[in-house]
Length: 115
Length: 115
Image 1 (cartoon, rainbow over the protein chains, first blue to last red):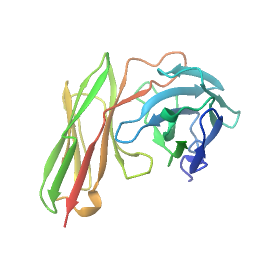
Image 2 (image 1 turned 180 degrees about the horizontal axis):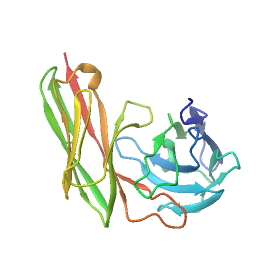
Image 3 (image 1 turned 90 degrees about the vertical axis):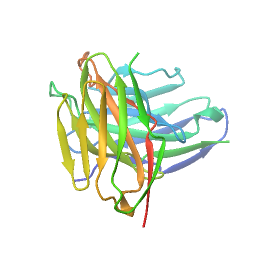
């Protein structure tokens, strides 16, 4: 059973450019969340997609946008890149359908470097 | 405001020297507390979910416990391969809008186990 997969592994961009990161959830999962992790910090929630809609959003500007496809995979887009956007971007998948807390399983991440 | 604080920031142990990591939380309506292990440059690996005070879970040399204000991750007779950053996260409130609630992370404890 393949876990959560992300692509690309690494990415180098320059300020002002745009980037798209991709995620495929764990088999059987229907919800995808994106997190940003700066060096030495815990992951920070960006947003979450369920049924192809953004359901929750963290404290991130509109430069960060996303999409979920019918097969539950997801993309994270970041426009007008800033130096401060350099981080490890993590995708986490979960299954919505339980009243208890939902365990989220993470992919390996995409390391984005903005020069 | 929901908040998670982990201590210590870093911990160095000799192989076989047992210790505990602390995760203190302030949250409005805890749905679940999660422990993850993260190796450098990788995504967090799920370890445990705890739902209510008094609950305990074990996996190999790790044991997680939960009270109303904090959680402990006890490491018994650690080995060098246990070296990693251990992250604590909480999921608060109730599911709404068809979404699983976001995870709120602490900054982690960097554990180094020397042979």
